[in-house]
Image 1 (cartoon, rainbow, N blue to C red):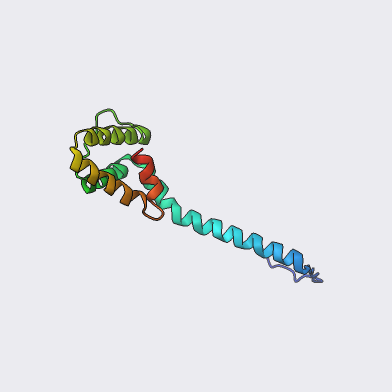
Image 2 (image 1 turned 120 degrees about the horizontal axis):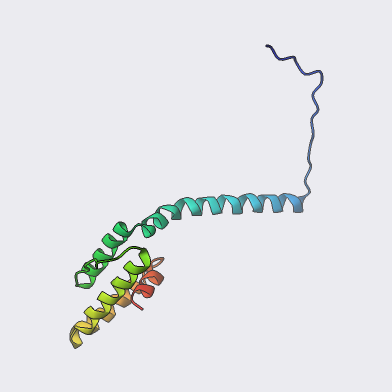
Length: 126
């Protein structure tokens, strides 16, 4: 079945004043920025939800700090994993001598001052 050609075409035109145009441009900019931010952070959020990926990251951090992170039994969610990491780290810190403790504080300071990732390390090292 073929379509008939329209009998007439109606065209609508919307005119914006300067203030309305600025508001619309701002809205488009904010929407684009939010979308770009979500596209950038989504992979990181997925990694943080995955226990195996987070275990690898914690193991690398522990190796950087000079100890071995061993995944404890019964870890079922990310909160348990973070708590296990913090408990093992506290045990490691309490076993250090004076010189090792000073080096550990310096390493914590270095990791805590990394741009973008510093606050995460500050939370982990309480």
